[in-house]
Length: 137
Image 1 (tube, rainbow, N blue to C red):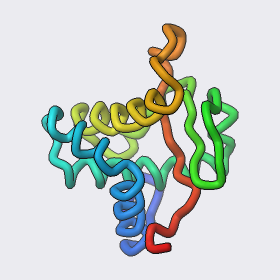
Image 2 (image 1 turned 90 degrees about the vertical axis):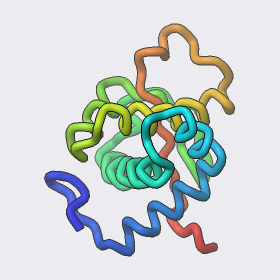
Image 3 (image 1 turned 120 degrees about the horizontal axis):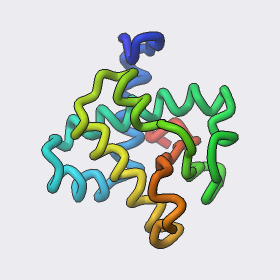
Image 4 (image 1 turned 180 degrees about the horizontal axis):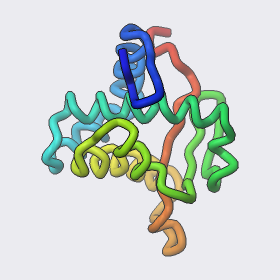
């Protein structure tokens, strides 16, 4: 399956990524989808795409492009410099509402852990890279 312009993944990998983000972000997906013009299903698919792309970017040094807020064996929470979510929208041909909703899910999780966003982080992009990749454990 073609994930982005220059990235292909097997359908089962995408399906696992959907299951993973649905389990990991749980109620946050429901809360954001309730108030966004994006369905829950669309939001899960967008989050899965971002996760798969973020995984590839992590190999290329994603954590060097921002500030790590929290890191464990299961996840890395980051404030990224640059245009991560704008790039995601372009790569995956996402509607602006889809990109904003996905960004909001990530922002809410980071704020829940790190507190309110300081002024200097308001323009930075939140991203949660889920390190474990087997939601069936």
